[in-house]
Length: 355
Image 1 (spheres, rainbow, N blue to C red):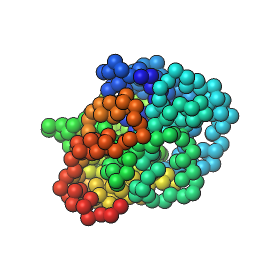
Image 2 (tube, one colour):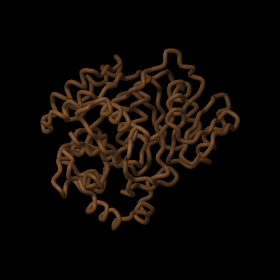
Image 3 (cartoon, rainbow, N blue to C red):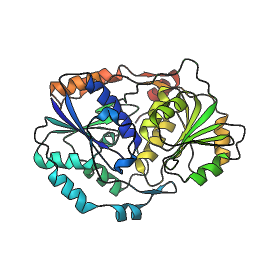
Image 4 (cartoon, rainbow, N blue to C red):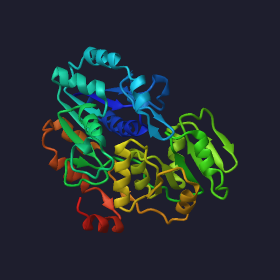
C-alpha cells in the first residue's frame, strides 16, 4: 500500500505523533509511505531522520505574540496564492490513501483529485461531541475547512462514545526518576516573561526549552535549552512536574509518565482552552491563565498526578489501514481503548460525568 502522510508542522506534537507512526511503518513490508510537512520554515525542523526524504511546504500557520494568537499577523504573513499553487501542483496519483494530521496542502489536493483521505489527529476529535471551551463560529469553520478529509478519526484522552482513539505514547515511566527539576515548555510566551515568572522561585530548579534559545545556558536555578528531542525526553522523564501550554501531545506524554501538569492555554486558541477544560474535568491538571508566580509556587506544592497508561504500538491502526475498510472505525477504537489504563480517581470521575 502506498500512503501519503501529511503532517502539520507548526506544533511539535503533530511531528511527535508522526514519528511513532513512521517507526511502526518502517517495520512493515506492506506499507510504503511519503511524508509531507507544512507550517514552518524548513530550517526549523529538527530530529527528522526517521521521515526519510520528506517534503516541506509553507502551508498555513497561526502566528502568536505574547501568549496569544495574533489574527492580524496571521493574516499578514499568510501566503494564500502560494498555498493555492502548491495545492494545484501537488500530484497525489499513485497513492492509495492519504493519512492527514491537520495538514492543508495534502488534504485539499486529495479532495480535488479524488484520493480517499483519513484524518488521524487531535483536531479531528472536534468533529464530534467532545468538551469545548471558547469555540467561535470562525473556529468551527477553520476546523471544518482547514484540512478537510473523507474520514475523521479523532485522537483524545477519552473516547466520549465517538470515533476517537487514544494517543500512542512510547515512553514508559523511569524506574527511579530524579524529580530534581520542573520542566517548562512555553514556546508561545516571550523569554523575558518566562524568566520573570520563574526567577523568584529560587528553591526550585527549572529546565526550560524554547524555540528562541540557540545554545544551552544556565542562569542560577534556571537552565535554558534549545529544542532537542533527546534532551527534552530526558528532562521530561526526570522532572517532578510540567508547566506547558495547552497542546495535546506534551500533556499526553506527561500523563503517561504520571507528571503533574500546570497548563497555560494559548489565548485565542479554542483547542487549547478545550484541552484545559477536559484535563480539569478529569482532575489531571491545574490551570495557569496568566504568568503568575504565586500560582506556580502553589502548584509546586501539589502532590503527584495520577497517570494514564496509553497504547505504545500503532500496529492495530496500521492493520486497519491496510485492510481497507476505512468507514468502519468501531472495532479499531474498541481494541485500542481496551489497552488504556486509567487510575482509580480518573475512572471514578469518568463514571460520574456525563459528557
